Length: 439
Image 1 (cartoon, one colour):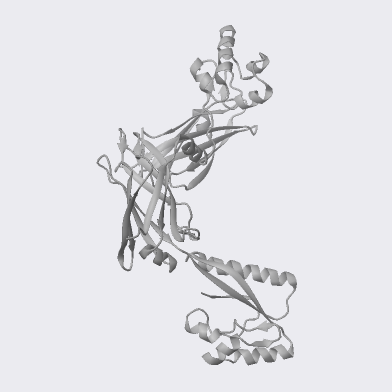
Image 2 (cartoon, helix red, strand yellow):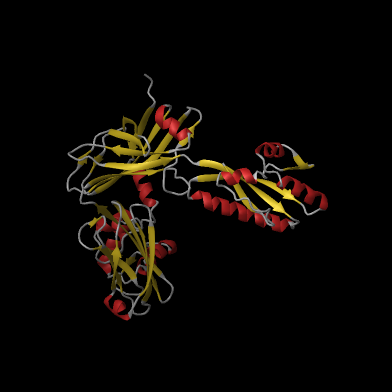
């Protein structure tokens, strides 16, 4: 019996995972005290390095560093490097407000449980901070922006607590903070925190292609191999204090709301899914369907629910995802009367936007426009009257293939028939462009 469904998957390596994290936002260097940082800390800083770190240690033996400008005057760095270090390093002098910390309540964050973010900065009396901007990217991919004008009490304390955050999924939460002072200068700091569930091991499946509504995954048809493919990004999260091995096997159960189980199958990823303690691991998977119930349902523009499951180390995480092929429709625009070129373009644009807006939430793609014109001349008014009075199905079919006037085909005038299908109402011809959609 031929195999009608299968799949592949893999875990991303360190480089690919870092690229995913970089897509969340800039990964900014940590803030350094040039007088207190140890040699290893200086050498590990991306703006300093081992060679410059050794020179800074030698300079500190001679005198205390007042500002990063001391490194420039000592000939250790150039102007460009000074500009970069000035935002992420400091000495004894408080010349500008610099962010020093972004922290959370407690050691861990959990899904569905509110938490607060805590911010602290280094004071600068000559140019006090004024506005703190916060960008939070949740594990689900959603983002939120907050802008806070700092009060006198917050300025005096040198810190701010912002409560009321809640994450709906586990994974990595990214925070980017920007502090603006009275002179227009900025200090930025980024941080990453793990979000976990009380049921500690989870798997999340995010389709690489979504339908227009964003509510379902969109299968892609592979014309070369004559099959439907469902490709997704995967995120595994381990909230345990020890490593978890989920093995290689992924089981897939496909169901339909109307008929129940359609099929089930399994496949292996390229290596064991090993999750270190309190970690998030990224990967991808793809299933293919060359025949059978899934192929037939997708070809018929239907939707199916996939349940992905794994098992290992005493855990059985699973996740469901709806996949839906999008219906495609066209629409006609009927214009009655004489309009300028600019009016025609504007009416066509408006009709396209209205039609797309209506059908987008239903995962239907509007693919094309056919324009029909009825001019206000006596001859064409007579044609309009003659064609619009056609009501029988047989005469309607004849009219759809018969020109009412040279160059003008009245295939859009099946108004009486469409009304019975619930698509249009049998009203008199409009005096402006209107979209009429047929599947």
